[in-house]
Length: 420
Image (cartoon, rainbow, N blue to C red; front, top):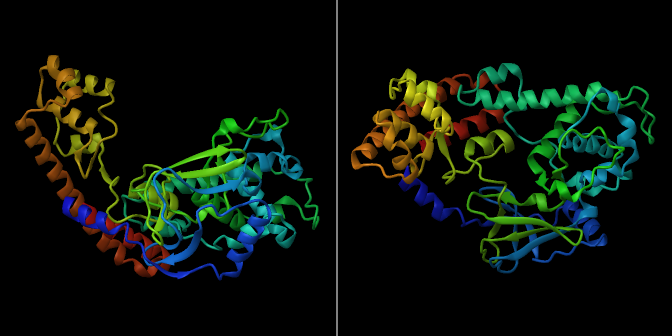
């Protein structure tokens, strides 16, 4: 596992673009629209297709540590401020019936503005967005049942959130509202299909913005959470890497990104979506990174008991529970997690007087570390066998799932196998 990671780690930065996307009509119009409204391409960014990530951005010059790589005027972004200043968004919903999240509100805004087509201020941005995003939770119930078991809970959770959001929108939509451009009602315009598309766009392309930047008006009782999501044209073309390190901030009404990573000319520039392992990346965004340094194998304390790999008396269990050593149990490239090591040490030693000192100083004996290693090997071998069987089973059901879903789930499971 370690050698594979190091080998791939060296190759990750060697991102060579295949061809430029700068001649794409939609990209030309998007950049022209942005420039006309005050955007400056401060780091000579170019959109291109890369061999490993497809669309991405590079610069025609070197990017040094602490360089600003992009600065987007807030007026070009879809934020809570955009929603709050759009009169029909308040008229569309019945606040007495409940509230909507910022994710749901931006999704509905996209649906209605997209419906306006060429009459929308955001038309050039919308035309630059993908018509379809391949993501595992946009699948049928029958397809989900065929997914490898390790994936099903995560995909089911995302499907539940999507369905819950859809029902929430339906319940709050005002029966009397009519579109100003075509006089159609909200239930006609906001179909489940177009809502799903907009919801996925926000989920996969939204950026974090400090919620304290916006003062929620008193006449906006419908917002249920913090206004911390925004859509940012062109900036959303950056791809994520586990090696990237970026800082986002709002400066003089511009949303800016500073890179804490150096890049050569023509090398793909990455940003960080957060500290995500591949399971999170695949289930949330629909992609994964071979050799992801944040990848891990999650463990469950119930399984450890069932496999008889640990045994705790009441005192041991209560202590582990109190110190939260029953949570965040995993094995990654560096070995067992801090909590997993603590739990294992408690199971090895009944002398509770030494638990605090040894665990929190990680002052484990050679013998303790050897036993921890042996247990990790057993767990990884078991995980590997289960994944292999899951992979074979899923491949035998190829004809029962769509080609796109089969390809993405198979590729991800093979990546998991390689990692383990």
